[in-house]
Amino acid sequence: IIKELIMKIKKGIPLIDQHDKNYMYGGKFGGNFIPETLKKPIDDLTKLFAKLRKNKKFLKERDYYFENYIGAPTPFIKLENLTEHLGGAQIYAKIVSEANGGAHKIYNATVHCLIAKRAGKKYIIGDTGAGYAGKMLSMAAKKFGLKCKIFMGAKDIKRQRPNVEAIKKNGAQIVPVTTGSQTLVDAVSECMRYWVSNCDTTHMCVGSTVGPNIFIKICAWSTAQISRELMKQVKEEFGKIPNKLKLLNCVGGGSSAMGFWNEFMDTNAEFIGIEAGGPKKSRLHAAPLTNGSKIGILHGAAQYVVQDKEGQISPTESISAGLDYPGISPLHCFLKDTKRARYVSASDEEALNAYKLVSKLENISPSLEPSHAFAYAISISPKLKKSDVIIVNSCGDSLKDKDIIKSKLGTYIR
Image 1 (cartoon, rainbow, N blue to C red):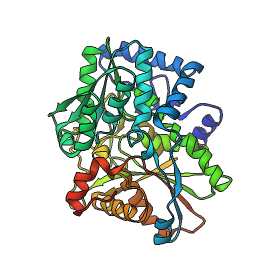
Image 2 (tube, one colour):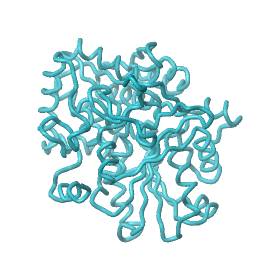
Image 3 (spheres, one colour):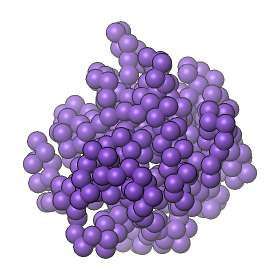
């Protein structure tokens, strides 16, 4: 199955297009499980994106804003002190948090705003958990003259105050979601409900590689910029792709990981996704791939979902709002089943300790999302050879987490 996946990529069929006529990957994941009222807007958006991704003028416009608005390319650096401290593998980081706004979400937000303008829509809405997707969409909406609403769980509004303030400063309206767990999963649900009634005038931006197929495609296509840059940077650094290369990325909905891995699909690079294992003393987590969760339908797509015996969505828990999601992108489910990627989890405590060590030794301050990936890098590096290379996607800046970090560790390092 891996050989078939790679063969299709070498023939020019991107991973996001490797679905059947029902938009299912591997016949099991994805699809468009949507109400009849959304069929036309989904079909319209699917047709429009199919045209735009081949339109030279649109691609030129996208690349212009990626370079001049987002700040591409983002840095690629060796973490000399962390490498020396741990021994073993050489540790590098792609500092995507240097992008305008402080996280990878700006790529998806920018592309969605460009699409909304092409579609003649004046309003744009989006969901957010950690606040980065909302912050980036509010920034891009302001840049392109669109009116913006951000749906955010009431729990996340409290724990991600810096990003909430940034969203408001950009002129966007925050819609608090008080149903369910009051986190990302409920924000996505409310956002989709709103779009059902307002799709004629409003464009919807899903903040990650989740939801009906078209939103998965747009998001993964947008964040692929990360690995396009990284491929060039790796070859410049090593002269070739290292034989034993591990690409580590935190995984919640899965957008940064898809962007980080995309260009390396047909190489020997090992993909490792790190999910949120939650507190060590709790049975709750946000790691469906690591914990053997069953397939269910969530937000219009079939995927592995944290659920109870009756198939109802179970509560999740993570110190990281951006990873606190019961599902996972159908693309990641597909990569797990094909064994092209493997998935592990890190606990809240491990992520905090990783943040503390990385921030102390290096001139970067990762948010709690990529701190999960750094935690796994820290655990495996001493066991590897010096010829091995680990690259971590530092996809978010810790500024949004400063209150949480200070309350847990008693200090905030930046």
